[in-house]
Structures are given as C-alpha cells and as structure tokens.
Amino acid sequence: MVAQNIFFYVIAAVMAFSAIRVVTVKNVVHAAMYLVLVLAGVAAQYILLASEFLAATQVLIYVGAIVVLVLFGVMLTRAKLGQDVNLTNDYWYVGAFTAVILFALLATSLLDQFGDEPLDQANAETQLVGNTEQVSDAIFGAYVVPFEAVSVLLLAALVGAIVLARKD
Amino acid sequence: MDDLMLNQFLLLSAILFSAGVYGVLAKRNAVIVLMSIELILNAVNINLVAFGAHNGTIVGSVFALFVIAVAAAEVGVGLAIVLLIYRNRKSVDLDEVAQMKG
Image (cartoon, rainbow over all chains, first blue to last red; front, side, top):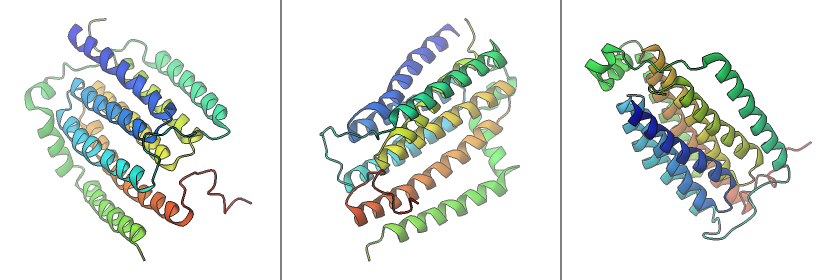
C-alpha cells in the first residue's frame, strides 16, 4: 500500500507539472509532448485504480491515435516548428484568475466532502474476476444500446471529418 | 497514510481540469485549445474511475470508455474544422476568427 502511494505521488507530480506546461509553454510541439506525458500518467493512474482494460485503451487511443492526430494538425497548420511564438491572448489573466478560483473551490469542496475516505479496493469481486471481464459484461449486457450509439457517433464523426477536410 | 485515498485522485483531477480551463480561456492557437479540452476530458475520466473504484462498481470504467470514444470523435471533427479555418485564413489564431462578432 505504501508502494502504491509512492507511485501515485511520483506520477501525480509529473502529471500536474506537465498539465501546467501544456498550457504555458510557448511552442506547440512541446505542448503536444507534455500532453503525451499527462495522458500516459492518466493510464498509470488507471492501473493504480485496478482498471487495466481502461489503461490499455487510454494508451491505444490517446497516446497512440489522438496525439498523432494533434501532431498532424500542428504540422498541417504550419505552426513554426521549434520556434517560440506568443500563444496567449490579451485576456490571459482572466483565464488564470478563473482557473485558480475554480481550483480553490474544487479543492475546498472536495476536502470538505470526502475528507479522508479510503479508496475501497478490497472489493472481493474485483480482485477475483479481473476488470476486463467485468467491463465487457457491462458493455455487452446492460450498456449495449449506448455502446451501439457510440459506434454510430464515431461513424458520423469520421464521415463528417472527411467531408470537412476534403479538398474541393 | 497507508491506503490510497479517494481525495488524492479527485485533487489530481481538479489540477488537470483547472489547467485545461485556463488553456481553453487563454490560448489563441486553436490546436492548443483542443489539447486543453483533452486535458479536461481526462480529468473527468479520472473522477469517473476513482468514484467507480470507491463504490465498488464497474459503471465508472464503462462511462470513461464512452467518454474516450466521444473525445476521439470530437478531436477528429475539431481538427478538420481547424484545418478548414487554416485553409481559408492562413492562420489558426482564434483572435482573428471574429466574423460573427456583433
């Protein structure tokens, strides 16, 4: 349990630093690289939460697909590679103020509400069966209709993206 | 400080969420705004999975999977729109995209 805590705090420190760097760094490509660190850290947190299927999905879809897509976006919009430009608009201090107030509100209300409740991982079912079987049972059992709806949504988004980005 | 606490995950997710909100509000590059939206969605996913583990149910993970799928669709369409803006205006600066300003 102590080892889990050490892992959590190391990964959380890297994630918090990288998340703040994503929105403060002056280079679009560096921001994408910091985003990779954050997304990989999220996958590691899923493993700490005993959701190994979700961790694999996170690595495949986010780190594998979405970051590549974002890098293609950076390349195709000719952001000057390796060059620092001013990426922040004139009202950045309003955004910073909002983000700080939001974090303070969230942190105080979370600490107030959940204090020091332990994360209950002693669930016997989770330990015995394994997370992947449970997820597949839920998706193809109780949640099969939303699952099919998400498939149609993905198809629609795919067709829409091709129609939008096609040249002519 | 022996067991993992629920609050650890919720506070980490609050940090990611706030960073994402700052990025959406303060950045003028459309691609970075899309990255910030990914940060926000990942913060929500951590919350879903943490509460799922807290309550001993799998539903949190299932919803997080749906959020990942919707995020993939969102970033695909979003980048297509950004590409169109770039083709029409030779720039992805969101401050310059103001034709609909009153």
